[in-house]
Length: 156
Image 1 (tube, helix red, strand yellow):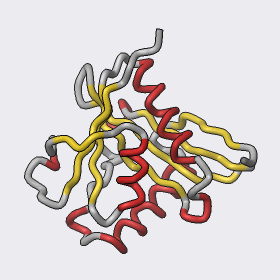
Image 2 (tube, rainbow, N blue to C red):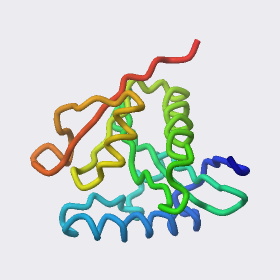
Image 3 (cartoon, one colour):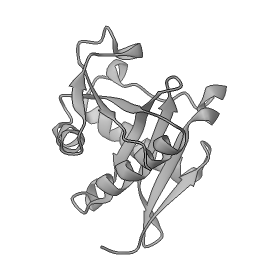
């Protein structure tokens, strides 16, 4: 694998927003606009989120974030790998990085929401130990939302 670097970034980071723009464009090809759950970057609570950008040879190629739900749970948000960089282990590296960041905060479980039109995402999450769970939070009444969760084992 080329030179891969994962960097924690602030919510206003330019590379983060460029990658999220690509994610949103991809989601709009798969889902109606009213079925896409965006992050409201104008919400002050966004500052509580953890964001990361993955660089390959100094080029931003992936991003992801964690939103605190409560003292024990966080939600994986805005997880995206540029299509031309997929199938190289980047998503696994980023997911592992974000799970480690969650552990550092004492998080016991990571949850996420995705949809049936993202089979590659579902395959990644289930392969990494995420299991189907009841819909939660804003997704509770969205019959098109598929939710997954993973218990984190705290490092010794």
